[in-house]
Image: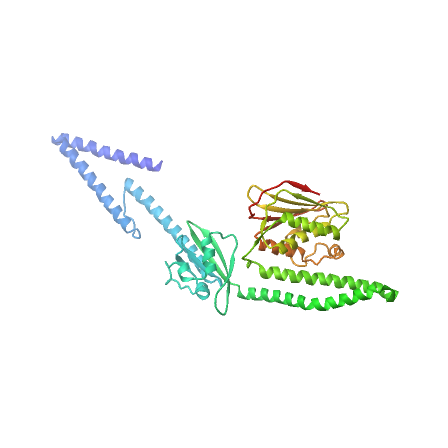
Length: 438
């Protein structure tokens, strides 16, 4: 309303000047000359004010010119907007400087690249880790300066849901973890972390477990052999020694199972991400073979097999056999007598193959679910020891799933049982069948 009022006032002033010009011209006998003179003078004033405003726009840091009427109001509004924009720009620059200082102080390498992969900014850690130099490298293509094949493949893949760890060639070998975040129009923030020490510690742990497990295998075999020999000659064993010897035999067998699982887990971990020649495995046939073996070990338990597809998956037969066996055996152990375990194998419309093992056992509380695949993690110590488990079964399943790009999902409810599913993203071409085998 204030601007409209100023406009009306300006129109009134102009009309008053026109009226005065007409009256003066009538008195002097030349109305058109007087009117032309007044309008020309007013136009010159407008042009003069316009020139001052344009000069100020060319030099926005200078003070705005003074003005009256509409011009004064326009200049006040323009100056207020300019001051607001200057303050906003200052705050934004302060934020950018703060973020750059924060990234600059990171021990991780931080690199900003545009949609063309050219470096816009990098911190000092990027120079230490990757040899980049800022600002000398600004505008250069990142992949021209960092020539690691795995790094280049990850950056060009455009799939950044998970960070990638890669090793540098040469000696000493270093391991970097790279994480990429996309923002803006194709811009990306790359964080690079040196995880060499972590990888070395993990490798040392795996070697230690593998070596110790291997060294334990021979003495355990000898101990078990002698115990079996002694117990086979039951008549020569004093009565008071029979129970201790039987317990020793049971514990020796349990230790052998633990050593076997540790060695197998170490082998699976060592092969993770290194398999280059997968074969097509028919899980339907694998299930048939596995369930036949389980009938011997658990003759009183009932496993229902529901096969809805014959599509196979790409992978390693032994690893898949081990993972599925662990899931089914766990379901059998923790299901009540007389309650069946249901194994379902099917293919959905997205081409995802899913194998599900469902039991009707005690169920697992929700707070335990995230940790079930940890080594030696037990929900219930007494129940786990009574079942004779090693605590490594689900850890083996997790690593087999990772080796086959599969997803392990667990759903459970106390008192109603548990459901474990393996979802394989790619299936080999084959014909589907519909079958229900008890």
